[in-house]
Structure formats: structure tokens, C-alpha cells
Image 1 (cartoon, rainbow, N blue to C red):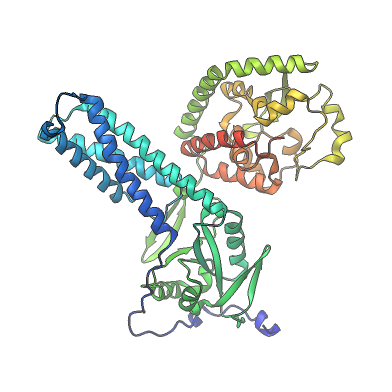
Image 2 (image 1 turned 180 degrees about the horizontal axis):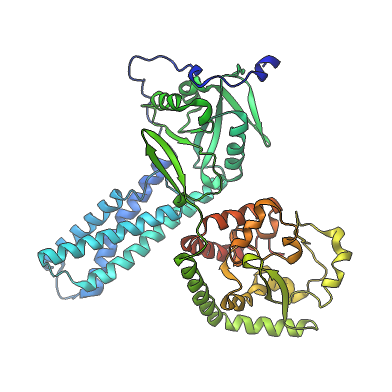
Length: 505
């Protein structure tokens, strides 16, 4: 690439030279991918689970008489089993629970399964009421929760299998990125860091800069081949066998060229996605609204008050009370172990900063020696934490019992009393020290818009192994998008993170 070519400005949008085709673009034979096999297995699993559930519900509700031969079973029982199974399976297809775009998506996939199951039995109740079929309510009461649970379990099992495969870079969608180096690199880096998303970048198309088609783009430790310019999208898809085209420079392409690009990809069985340039904003806050043929992305403001906050506070207090009752034996055992192991109090009370910069006392089981705070300055040279965090992997101040209770996060159980008192939440950003808050600048201060939590995205994503920048990004992502559904998902992920002991020291 010549120096002059490197410094040429982006062309005007109208100069994107798309090939002139007066006929329909040639079709590319649809590639058979992992998604087809995964979807087939998922659909067959659903089709096998549902008849078993309906038949089992019939048995539980009406029982089985060994003296009655199968051939003499009443016709209505068989009809109800067949019809209900067929309608249930068809409804799963209608709600697209196995859509390739959401496979492995977690919450979205589970939400569709739940909606499909509720819709089936809602329809069944209406039909029963209108035609007075007198379908046994006990049958519905058994089949609905049992079937929903088993279907969710099946989808969870297949998703876990998919995530394990993606950790080994299997079951990946091949992505062709179309954008400038500035806009393409962050997307490529993010997809490389998160293989669980299921996207593997196989090439890049850049603006009209006169680049050498054999050149490449360096992203981290890998070289991504540049397969041509924007106008070469079709040939680049064929060359790379891409199944997805991701546009990161829509402003360079322009509206007309974006439309022409979609025409170019017709018949090639390729998904086209556009990077809106907005990061860490959850889907529920984004809505595309067409205005006079122009699609505009509307982003709702995050809500920190009202009914959602009241609901979150209620869930926090009820949840904390339930966990305290269930974990009472563990709390008692930890208290005795801490007291016997070393001199000093059982609990450690530290000042933290909470909602709207309000200070509070956070409770923990004492895991360090009583003079730990006075030795902090002497150990500053051993600090392994990033940014404002102070962390030492093998901290000499930690007691023998302290190492154990930290490994399984038992030292944080007394924070449930903070949740009951309203100073903390079950899920939220990490509770910061006053000295940390004093140094907050810029967007970091938004962490204080919600109550700190016992667990959060930082907890389920690596805890102490995270860099300061990544911990802040995760906390801000939670603050900007928090919801009850997300809290429940994080609580479930917390159990796995605690068992794996990742980043616990």
C-alpha cells in the first residue's frame, strides 16, 4: 500500500462502486452449518419431551389400572394427548424457540420457551371454556409446570453443550466485517475476547482506500485478512464462506449503499447486522422506529426509580431473609471457626459508600488478622490490583479460616444483614471504599446511582482477576441496564462462580 493511498480520505457515499446488475443476483447454495445440526437436535428433543410430559400428566392425574388393557383406553384420553402434544410442538415453532439467531442466547431463548408454554395453555383454557370440553384442570396443573420446566432444562442443557464447544472455538458463525479500521478493530477484539458469543471474524472489507487485497489488519495477537473494498462484499462472502456480514461503518456507506448492499447479499443466505455504535446498552432499551422510510434507533433512558426500584427492594429483602434462614447453620459454623482460629472479633465492619454517595457500615466475617489495616502501607509494594483496587493473591494478613471462607465467599454472608437494612442489594456494583470514591472521575461516578450489591456482573465475570477498566465497565453496564430479570440471572451465575472459585482471593 502506498503512503498516498493510506492518507486518502474516505470517498463520498455516492462513490461506493457497487457492481451494476440488471438481473437478480446469483444465489449461493446455502451452507450447512453447526446451527442447522444444533437446531435439528433441539427441535427433536422438544418433540420427544412434550408427548412424554402429556402422557405422564395423564397417568399422574387419572392413574393406571393394570387390569385394563391399553387397547381399551378411552378415545378422549388418546385424543387429548395427541392434540395437546401437536399444538404444543407447533406453538414452539410459532414462537421460534429454535431460531438460529438466538441459539445459545440464554435469557431470550428461555423467554420464548416460557411464552410458548403459557400461550398453549391459555389457548387451551379458552377453547375449553367456549366449547365446554371439560378438560380436567388437574391435567393442566400438572402438564404446564412440568412441561415448561423440562423444556427449559433441555434448552439449558443444549446451551451448556454449545458454550463448552465455543470455548474451544467450535460452533462459531463466520463473520465478514465491513468497516474502517477504526470501527472494525473494536468489534473484532470484542468478539475474539468472548468466544461464547459464537462469532469468528474471517475477514474485513474496508472503504475505498486503494488497499492491497492481500494485506491484513492486526487486532491483538491475530491478523485478520482484508478481502477487498466495500464493493467486493459479494466476492468476499464467497471467498471466506461467511454466514454473517457485520457493518461497522454505516455512516461511510450511506443509506443508499446500505440498501444496495442488502440487495448484493440476496440469495446468499447471509445474515446482515449493523453495529449501531452504542455499547453496553441492553436490547430492551433500544427500539428501531421507521420515520419516512428512515430507520431510527431510539434509546430509552435508564430508570432508577418508581415501581422497578420498589420491586427490586422487595425482592432483595425477601431474598435476603430466605437465604439467612437457609444459611443459618453455615453462618454459625463460620462464626465459631473465626473465633477459634484467631483472636479478635467475629465480624469485620468496614465503611463503604452506597447509593447517592451515602456512607454505611458493611458487615463481613473477619478473614484477616486484627492489625490488617495498620499493615496496609507496608504491603503496598506487593499490590497486584489494577486501578484503585488493592489486591494480593497470597496476602499474609489472611488467617487460615479466612482463606477458606474467602474461597467460597462465606465471608460475605453477613452482608445479608446490610440488604435487610436497605444499605445494600443482593445484586449491584461492588461496594467501594471512601478513598476510591474520592478518586472517581467521569462516567465512573454513575456506579453510585444504584445500591451496591453482594454480587454483580464483576462477581460472575472473574472477581479479583478482572482489570480495573473491565470491572468498571461491567459495573456501568449493570447500572445502565439493571432489571429484575437480569438480577435473577446474575444470582444463578453467582452460584457457579462461587463453586468454580474463579478470582477468589
